[in-house]
Length: 128
Image (cartoon, rainbow, N blue to C red; front, side, top):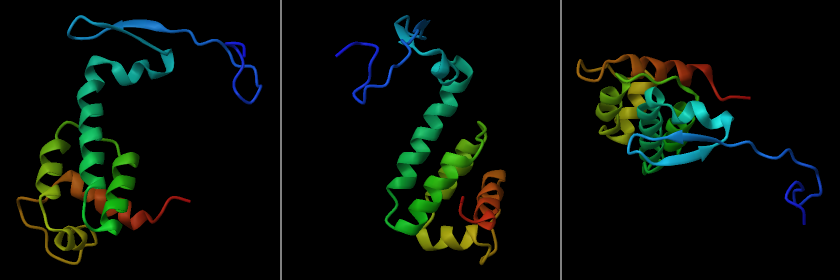
């Protein structure tokens, strides 16, 4: 087994790693492709997206969980979406599904740009 060969026998290009220094002073090696995910300005959004995915997967209603996961994976997040997500994720499953499907009136404390994005995502239908 050679380092430049995968298990299937296809030749692979050797990876070129770059060293990056994190906030704490530790150095990690990352591929250039993944460098944008570890930049200082994107690190808070990456953490937010991971928390959102964890919270979305742990809903007791499977259909709502699937919808929330697909929404988090496909949406563009902003820093102000953090508070809106915290308010929405505390809602009951049935009430949240009715909010997103526009079957109930939106309370003032839940009206946000994130909820509008969720409603547009639902109206767009499944990705094919």
